[in-house]
Image 1: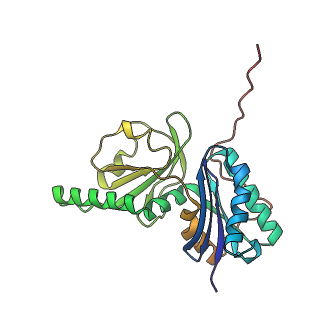
Image 2: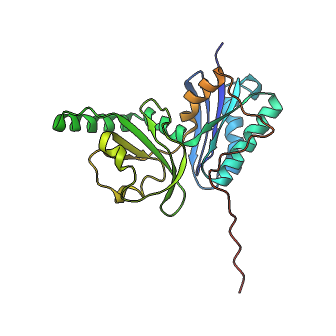
Length: 246
């Protein structure tokens, strides 16, 4: 029996909903627009199900990006996913945002072509066949990012962390691998380094990048407890104080 999983991604400014049949994406709705989650997420879910003649009860599970990322975006996405799971009595799956970005990069044909070209250039010049590492970065303001390191199979190799970037960041990885820096935090790292093994590519999170992990977690029955599941913020949310009126 095929697994049909509704995928929800709201961890950054992007708002994305997709349907996966096993690991194949059959539909997606996506927009990259600030503060669109609250107004568009429910509509996207309704429309994508109706357009595919499905209801929430036809889905095997609901998967949501669990963070790290935007506090507001994560709250909207997780609250919506939990509500759907409660109402339709479906299991809830949480997928790390950085893992979703890494998978999106692996799926991107243009990025894959750029990586292949760089690896061939390095091999031609040095005879070294360097492996690939993927470093997705989510902007955490100033020179800080949320990040982790993934291999070419999409497996996470290091814990997710809040990292302040400088000229020495990822120097060890760059000496022995081709390193793809991607996500909305990678652009501010680009001016800090000039290394032949570094490649930068724009890739925002899409719900489609959750499909492989979500399907694997469903088959292993690795579900979240709807009553207690909370997004992975990594850092505590601190509300700004309103400015005093003069």
